[in-house]
Image 1: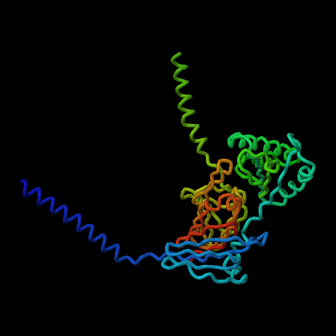
Image 2: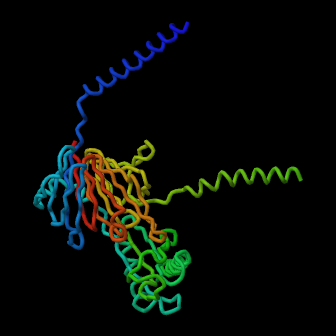
Length: 214
Length: 150
């Protein structure tokens, strides 16, 4: 009885390891799937014409690009390729259709309030018609009104304060003729300062409402 | 009395099931702004026509056919567009400057695409990753064009 059960164990072990071995052999026989290579091109900003920087990393190396219209090609089995220039004609030939499908650049307006008041400054009031015409120029416009604060007070309370400012701007835009339902209001509180300051610093330029039309 | 307690129970169950749904309702990450030809959003294995104005959510993919192009603008003003026969997935997206929450992972699966950075590249550049099968691109406020060859 004891012998029979140990024989059974051996048989099971053989089947298991045998099965494993075949699976291994099969896997090794499959050709490894090649990783699709990528061509990565740094371009100037379509509106401002300025160029930033990118860092391209693969498991085998890193390459930095900072010159407009330069490119690197990365395959799965080597360091990123040397950085080479790419002519505007080649950029258009490869990426023309994608670049033509880029949505229009979002436009930004900053509104400031009179000191300790819900009333816009004269300069900000003068911007309202311009905001309306920017909205009308877009096929599917979104209007986002974001309230900002300085770093006085608590972070959480500043999110609430920024929202209050944003809502009062929504009322101004709705009165000027924008459908209220198309205007989204939100607050970044003290999380997105126009003028970088330490915490607990009063700064009038940070107490603002930004409007994005996109 | 008994009935009241029971209806209170039902109410509690209703609230209990309804609130998480409301809480989990994800906010749109962005919207389709341009499209032509065969252009789709792939969401939970379903394919939706990518028409201008349609909302895009985290984990959605954009896919185009042989004659298709599509362009989106995300909440932080990032712009992304695809040429024909292309696919890019918005793997991860969070833009909550009030709470200091930032994340963006775009997976370029195939074809050609253009990316123009938005506010996130200024506020939290390290939170942005453009992934291709063979390389990862980190950005510092800029425009990038990517082709994934097959």
